Length: 372
Image (cartoon, rainbow, N blue to C red; front, side):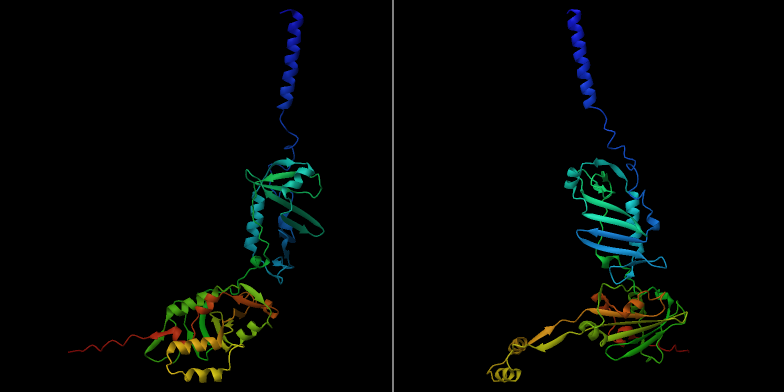
């Protein structure tokens, strides 16, 4: 091989090596963004936020800090927010880092469904927004931190679910006392009976004044009742003027609790009772009964079928509660001025319906010991 040919070969190899090196060059521009490797909230003063708005699929919830620095749900009757749930959300976002830059190309960014979920932190006139897109195929989620069309789209490890149902953010606790705080429980049952149970201290047995000697308080029933009343949480809200609420108020059992510190807590629970009514389209009930009794052979099933044809049963209504007492013991007492609070049905069905539910037969007295 002559020198000219060798030189040409070396030149070609050098050019090819340069091309390969250029094609395999490290891409530093994309991941050189200073936000990569840092928390989603690195540039957001979350602890100084006055308002937090969560949006997902067109549904939003807004939480706002009041003058006492407590969080409230502005979009849900201004009720107190569950601050432990809020802290968990903020901590999850703070713990998630930005993995890398995905694109700065607006056309490609448009395919990543950005805006599916949005978190906005606001304080005064300034705000910061986390705009999430769809989940990435290999894990993580697409994210944008700036509103500009050419702002970078990042990949983050955060896959936090944003709960945008306002009711779910409410601190639903209706009472905050402990069963051991109560020294007296007075009950006015909806059926008309009344009972008062008392004790000297948290370790003493419950007593009923002037109770018949063959009866005694069923302590387990009282303990279960206090446990239910001390853990009440609302599930829905309604207008105090609604038909079901008005009917529930007329059929309430009222529980007056007195603490060892002589604080009084009143809990009233009721529901519209089940009703059986004559069907509007049914035949005249007098004629129907006459036809029925005129039948030569009348069995029980015939009467039941006739009754079912003439009547219909309207189920019992939702269970509503009214709670009053010191604000520290009944945190939602003030909210009841324009809201009725619904609780779970199983709580109502677990309540004693009358005095007998809290009493049991006393054991017979021991026979006297004969002394010889």
